[in-house]
Image 1 (cartoon, rainbow, N blue to C red):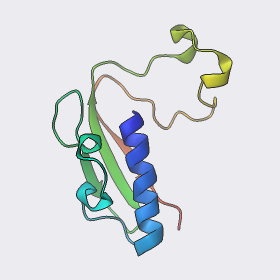
Image 2: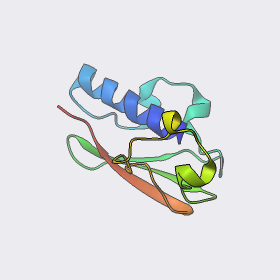
Image 3: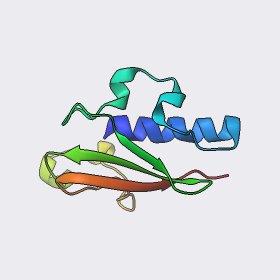
Image 4: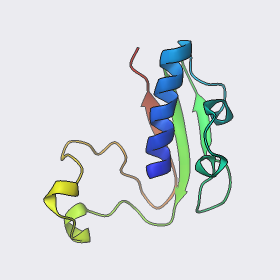
Length: 100
């Protein structure tokens, strides 16, 4: 998940610099390890579908567990309203967009 969050942040920076989404993740000039799904060792899937919208896809061995079930302290749990990175087990795509 950290890779996908980092890629999403770097896509936003790219957009601010170029006023366009990158044509592919290689244009982010990031470490190559960050571009591969650790579950499959395949590149993360990225598709720009509009001027500001895109999809990031990955394979997950497990669904997003509940923070309370993981025993995480309240201080490190995500905000209650931020379910945007929750995912089921298996292949899942996140619909994202940059804020112009």
